[in-house]
Length: 634
Image 1 (tube, rainbow, N blue to C red):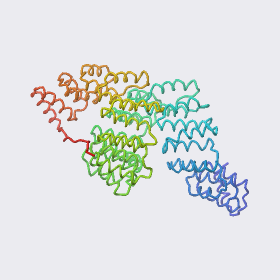
Image 2 (image 1 turned 30 degrees about the horizontal axis):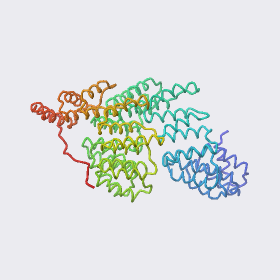
Image 3 (image 1 turned 90 degrees about the vertical axis):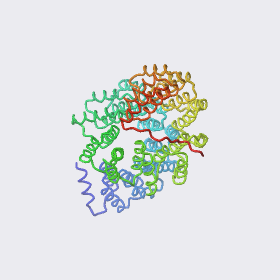
Image 4 (image 1 turned 135 degrees about the vertical axis):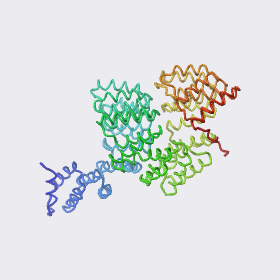
């Protein structure tokens, strides 16, 4: 039976004689169509028939309005209900969560509980999504409520809890929820695998993958895409690529995951090579997210010609709004960094400049290009246009500020931001004050915070560590773990840096050995660079060089740069030449490496070699940027 034709025929009747049972049947039928004009007509029939006092019919109509995206009509119906049930609250709460109006979603849930309405398994998932996005500390309290009302046995609730805990960086709670779930579906497995993948934890991912089969659940493409993301975030992009090439039907997300992973690892040539392979295969059309990643890699390898080709292709194959919404910021940076200021200006004008997300992307990207003053000019322009900043804006801008400007941005945040001291904003303030040498102010921000996440503790540990307060850094790390927060890779980077700055080499080496043994982390290049820096600062250059030789894979520029810097301190020409040879291969455009090596030769009185390095630098058209300090006098 064609229900749409039947509904249209009934709606065309001008007589109001439609029974309650007929209207109820039509309401059930419309649930699948979600056709707003028909819902409105049915509402009129309901009013004509005098049935707007029937709570069950009004609640069903309210659900239809909310599902169709008409919140105002849904709220008008909600207002006439004398005692709204959980079935009336749920579509309102779900709509607010879907619309990313998280504060109102949480407020609606609180109002429902104040009215002594018991929540069920349908209301918890949207509330948990909003809590994870807006108020992470509420997740545990919501979990307790779900247990109280026996809702955790519902698979969607368990899945929402796993997802919420993972977004709050609380992996132990996410895993406990998964392990205790009475029933699991494919989404449950994908959610917990995604939680580990987001922080590059491969060992538990592979263990979970082995367990899926025995639980009668087979991985799907989403599972494999998530696992590839985990490999990429662990710095093992080549293994992610191997999985990609073995997939029978990879989709655009599959290719984008690996392309973006290589981009994050700064292997942009490989990212472009994979994109080229996909285009030659011709099986998967690239979407605007993939094109955005490709444009970003074109910028990094200074291939503006390829970037312009991708720009033209994107405009031909994707809607302009969607294309510029995703790739616009990357294009602005491509043209800005290649000196095409007019093209850069035209692209920026085509983007949605009323959206703070657009400004955030451009400001952040300009800062990454080394165009800090231009980024700050864009921030001032944004504020002058009356566009409100958010946490992302202020976190990005604070990373560019000296102490004086940072205090001005801090005052702006207090004056204009309705949400006050959010966790991410406070973290950025700690980093800014620490970088500016104002540890007391950093500690004041840290102490004033009601909610501290792992990034907060990392920022304060790093602040103490980088200023030589090694014991305070270690005490904070221990305190964080005593409170039940699990350290992540950045935590260990901060502690290793602290050991390097205070010369505690043996303690640092012991911690590095425990990374895999006790904490289950694969050391990243950042961790290896910290150890090399620690050994080199202590004058143990031969050990540092030997440590680099034992590293799995290829040592990066940070590792060799740490060794070269120490060679200047200890006047080691032998190891300095080894490090310099690697650095001019890895980053030939970095003038600092040439200046450091020339200085090593000059201090040893080897003027001929010093002059040769200077000429190499001039041959690359490089120059040393004028020095500047982030330390201001408060």
